[in-house]
Image (cartoon, rainbow, N blue to C red; front, top):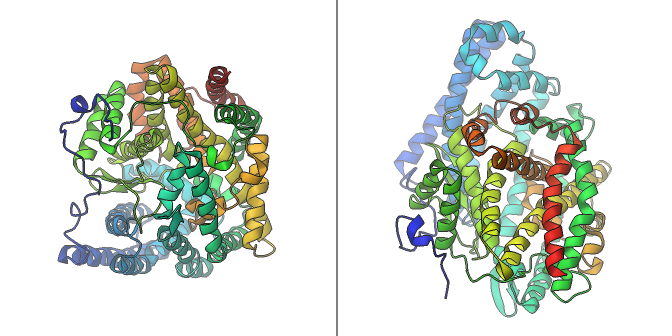
Amino acid sequence: MTTEHPAQANTHASNQTLSATWNYDRFFPSLESAEFEAAYQQHLQKIAELNPQLGALQTGTVEALEGLERLIQDLNTTLEHYQLLGGYLHLYITTDSRNALAQGKLSLLETASLPLRLIFSKLTQFVGGLDLAPLLERSEVLREHAFTLERMQHEAKHQMSAPEEELATFLSLSGGNAWSKLHGNITSQMMVEVQGEKLPMPAVRSLANHPDPTKREAAYHAELAAWRSVEVPLAAALNGIKGEANVLNGKRGYANSVEPTLFINNMDAETLSAMQSAVEKSLPDFRRYFKAKAKLLGKEQLAWFDITAPVGKSETEYSYDAACSLVIEQFRTFSDRMADFVVGAVDQQWMDVYPREGKIGGAFCMEMPSNESRILLNHDDSLDSVMTLAHELGHAYHNLNLAARTPMQREMPMTLAETASTFCEAILSNAALERSSGAEHLYILESQLQGHAGIVLDIHSRFLFEKAVFEARVERELSPQEFSDLMLECQEKTYGDGVAADLRHPYMWAVKGHYYISGLSYYNYPYTFGALFSLGLYAEYKREPELFKARYDELLSSTGMFDAASLAARFGIDIRSEKFWAASLEVIKGQIEVYVGLVG
């Protein structure tokens, strides 16, 4: 029987069991509705109207100021349409990858929207040749989009010729996008037998949190066997995506695979170097944590399937209802606006909660029109799942603060996209830690350190792996075994003697969908940035709570309009200094010291 959080009745408007699937009909009655078809046709019409506008700009038929203003306004409207249509289709596909109707409509939408990508490419080239300063002085619309236009000028320096960019755009659906879909379809439809029971892969991976070590180990071996059975197509997908990225990076004049991602993330090499240096110096601290945990579990060394094993004891099982109530209660300690926002999200069924066959693993928050978001979870009643809920609701709250901005102003880097989510996790985890004692205190501290280890140590192993793959892929394709060997080498560099060498996870390259996102490489180090940056922000919040609260929502609203260093400077933070990152990691080190002391 599930024990609900004692505050539940007071923090949520209803004692009824909350809906476990998200609300589809808020946007359209159905996939086959006349309303959806009308919106689709309107989207096509808007794209068709953009081409003559761009052509007039390119030929000088209209004055640059007038033409740019109108084009930016119409592009923003078209992006809103695409967000609605694409988001709606993803609601179906991510929860049921076998939905052929949704898959087919998404393919149609992507194909029909390719000209939109070409328009942005050509506009970037056009803006690259402008003297922007006098135009910005004369136009409020352009000044509001100054950061976007200045980024276009930088990006124009790395564009291929117009015909090459057009060819790359049209081939992307049959290249990187197709490989990405293959990974998603294969992994979401996998059913794995564990001790006689067939489970979807997300549920199998959730067994890593099970208190029974035999259950965890059985799930680990079953999972590895399942990944081995699909390693050939997944290796082909990874080779295809990274090979395509290497070719395009080279053609666009980038020195390496990391350089374009720094531009995408609104940061510079100096910042990344400072952060990575601090992370590498912190790795021995995380290994001390792993060794202390092994001692708690009565082992010489942790196995991979012990990393997220529960320790300590909590009297509460965090059902979804209880998790929502706990999040609302703790968010209210920060602001009523944040807590009331979550109440609305729960009541309006923004969440799809539990794992099932055909549903993708992990969790995400997807921005939708009208100040709304949709959140995918794979909830399992653990404290970790509560933290995931808080994390994704942080993204949704970020989206709320961005809602007044145009789509082009909302285009923010992942480094800053993770700011609100990890800050919200900190609100919840620190409050839970402060109010606990004894075995429950150890349980919550363990949960915190698991999260920190994942976001710092494990993410660093993934960064090293992806960098090594890119470098090797320049010369040839890699076999499934080579991918696994590289993964283990990178785990050795990060986990070291904290986790037994013969019981690590060689197939993490197959597990993580982040490697398979077409056109977006290194979907890893920005997580570390977001987590450590948020620790720095949280320290500022504790130092001057009211002043911080007054500036926080505006910070979130501005994340698509300034670079990371400029935004950090608003809070007196120098992200190019290793000292800042080391200070955030010292907070984690302090928690490890407490943990080691509790273990004895």
